[in-house]
Image (cartoon, rainbow, N blue to C red; front, side, top):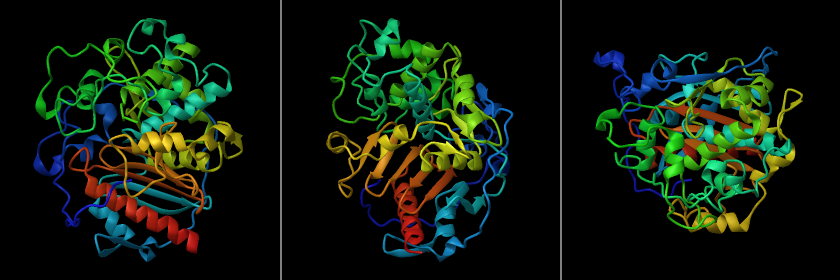
Length: 412
């Protein structure tokens, strides 16, 4: 959902890997290129993780029906590309496309295998919100309740008046900035250190940071009233994870395994980064294989049903693409507004391109995508390792290609 961009060449060479340079990925550098190419698919070797078991049930087998996606013509910045050329140019590590319930395309870069879990970054938020939907259906969480109802330690803090729905829609008003993730002083970058993602990265660890994520949540001041314009603040979703643990008495990874991951027919366990106090980094710490993430996406496409199991209610899934003018207006008032898409909004931790088309997705730094298109009955998983955390050009190119793919499937 990027605005129009000036013409810039996109056929760039992939940077050398750590193996090629002779420098190894470490806990300090693995999010930075070129180390991220290896680090994103070896997270459990670089930081603390908890495991969300796949359970003992059968794997959800999806039949294969190969389609040559190089038939899809991608127009971007007045040039034509094939879908595969887009994957190469946008530093894609793995891609899985599901259409009409069949796996029609898979791609893995050199050194990446289908069995490797890959960091999902903020696509994790969409997984977390789906678990919240299950807890809402069970009556353990109410979306209109204030967060202090579930977290008494937040009574009298800046979180007073913030509801669960404000968290889900990124409308909590606490002071937390991450609109420039290339700024080492950005709160989003500092959260990487606090939550245990890294031990400082290329900028080194800043002194006097909160000891852990929960401590930071409790100390945050307000920037604006809760329920105002959309402002992307990842730490809001960490509060959702905290609530989920409080209302169930379970570790988040175990809870996610029991209610989600063990019920979608996943082939492998998912990993989840935890901080030094064991707090789950649910806003950006999930790792999963491309195929298993595609299974999760297909469950969403099928209104919560995974191979016959109703994982989450269809009503919760339908909330995402129920057009809401207030959400559209609050999104347009925020810094992420897309002037070329007047229908865009953010709801229940999903970026909605167009509710009428049933087109929405989860996005994460470095080029992580889980995209769902109801009108073409398609799911796309694209996991990448961009040279930079954010790259508007690469994001726009990938979005253009996937929009072309959805339209091609619809026309066919």
